[in-house]
Image 1 (spheres, rainbow, N blue to C red):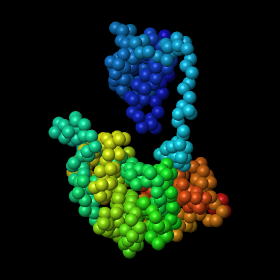
Image 2: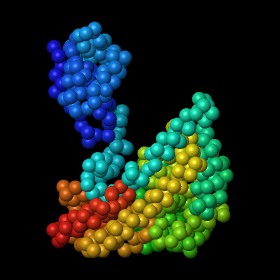
Image 3: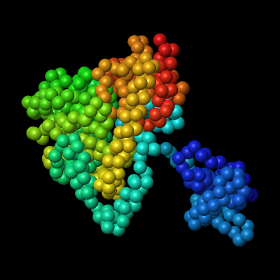
Image 4: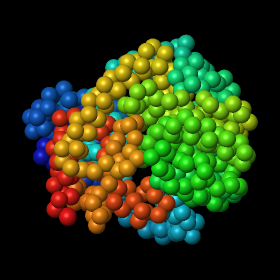
Amino acid sequence: MTIPAEAFLLDRSLEQTLQHQLRRQIVEGVLEGRFRAGEKLPSSRSLARHLGVARVTVTQVFAELVATDYLTSRDRAGLFISGRIETAQATAGTRPAPVPFDWSLHVEDRYARAQRRDRVSDWRRYRFPFVYGQADPQLVDLSAWRDCAVRSLGRREFAPMTGDLYGEDDPELVDYIARHILPRRGIRARAEDILLTLGAQNALWLVVEILLARGGACAIEDPCYPGLREILSHTGARIHPVPVDAHGLPPDAIPAGLKAVFTTASHHSPTGATMPVERRRALLRHALAQGCAIVEDDYEFEMSYSGSSLPALKAMDEAGAVIHIGSFSKSVFPGLRLGYIVAAPPVISEARALRSLMLRHPPGLLQRTLANFLSLGHYDAQMNRMRRAYAARREVMDTAIRDSGLQLAPGGGQGGSSFWLTLPAGIDAARLGHILRERDVLIEPGHPFFAEPAMGGTFYRLAYSSIPVERIPEGVARIAQAIRELL
C-alpha cells in the first residue's frame, strides 16, 4: 500500500521550516502507528508537487529518515516504512494497561495554582499586541548574534567550556558588565560583586531566598511587578504593600522592622514613574536607620525619554545596603534570559552557593556569545537602533492616545516601553481586555499588579515594543471605540 501524498500538509505560517514539518509528520505517523511497516512513501516528485516545495526539500527529509532507520530504500521500488522503529501500535495489546500513578498524593500544586493566568502566549497572532516585555525581531541584529555564537565555538574560546565551571561565570562577560554596563548606571563594582543569573526573575528568586526564606518582613511597591509578589508568596515573609505616588515609592510610608524593601526606582513597574534623587537619598537613609536591605530592580534603564536617565540607586549606596538587579532580556532579546546581581561580597557568595544547588551557572556558551556581542560593539548598535524605534513608536502612541481621548493614569512616567492608563468609572479593564481580544487587540489589565486586584480594575497598560509603528493608531482607535461602547 502506498501512503497518499494528501496525507501530508504544510503550514507556512508556522515558525518551523517546511523541511522540519515534513520530517515531523512522517516520524509521528510511524511512532503513532498510522504508517505501518512495509507501506510505501509517495515519490519525492509527486510529494513535492503536492506540497508546493522544491523536490530537494523532500529528498533531504527522505535521506535523513533513511539514515535514522525510519525509512528503508528498495532498489527501483522506492522508499518504505522500515519497521525497525518500535511504534505505539506495535506494542498495543501486548502489555496490560497500567494503573495510573496518583501524583496528587505527592504534588501539592502550590506553584502552578499561583501562576498568572492572564498572559497570552500566542500574542503574535494578534494584529495589535500592546503587550509588555516582547521584542520586535526586526530590531535584533540576528546576523551579528549568529557571528558571535560561531566565534564562541572557536577552539580557543570553546576550550574552557569542555570542563565543569562549577559555580564560576564567564570572566569576559563579568568584566564587561563591571567596566562598561554598570558605569553607565554610576555603579563601580569588582568581579566579586557580580553574579550572573537566568534573567531578573531568577535574580529576584535568589535574593528573596537569601533574605526572606526563613521569614521576616518586607515592603513592596503597590502596584508592582507581579512576578515579585508570586516569589514572595512562597516564603514565610510578611509582605507590606506600600502605595506609590507620582514619584514612586514614598520612604515615609515604609513601616519599620523590615528585612528588605523592593523597588523599581528608575522606572516604576508598571506606571513608569521615576524616583527623584532626593527621594532616593531619603530611601537610603531610611534603610540605614532601620537596618534593612534595599533590592533595586533596574529594568529598562536604557529607555528614558525625559532627558538622560538618573544614576541607579546603587550608585548612591555608600554603605553597601543595596542589592542591584539588571537584565539583558529587554535590551538584547527576551529569550536570552541572562541577568546579573550586583551586591556586597557576602551576598554574592551566598547567592552563588544557592545558584550552584540549582543550576551551577547559566549556560557557558550563552555567556560567551553575549560577551562577544557586547565587546564587539553590537550591543551598543542595537541599543541605539531600539531607542530610535521606540522613541518613534512612543511619539505615535502618545499622539494616538490623546487624539482618541484615552486617559493616562496620574503619575505615569516617561520611561520604559509602555503607557499606564485608566478607564472611566464603571468600566472594568479585564472585561475590556476580553472584548478587545475578539477585535484582534491585546492590552494588559491592571489587576495582577495590585496587592488587592480589585484596586487595579480601572487600570491597564499599553506597550509598544512588539507592535509595528504603522499599526499603533488603528489599534488605539479600536480600544477607544470599545470603551465608548461600554459607557
